[in-house]
Image 1: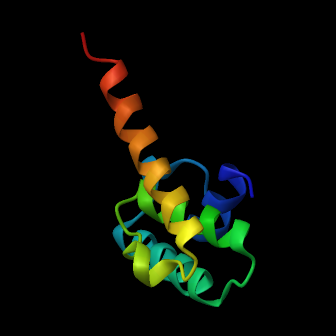
Image 2 (image 1 turned 90 degrees about the vertical axis):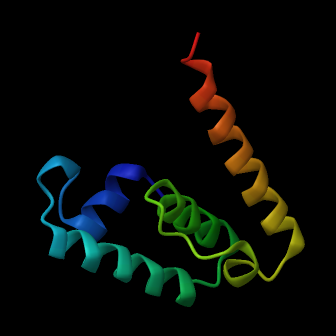
Amino acid sequence: MQLDDLLQRYFATTDLSGVAPDTWSAGIEHCRVDLGLEEDRGKRFALWSFLHMFGSAPDLDVAFENEEDREAARNFIDLLVASEGEGEA
């Protein structure tokens, strides 16, 4: 899954600056439905990560049945937090 493809699929654009609030809400909801229906672990993780970046991901215990997947998601969150601190001096 490519980021541009996900943005196009859920928001009909790769430029989020012009996305209307209704389109934003509908795109997030569509992605959450797709996450719930997706059975492939890798694709589920990609969709959850995408939602997490927008502050809309479900809790880990809801999104992932497998503890390994929940741990991978925790690691992803930790990496994001660490990368946010890298720009500060």
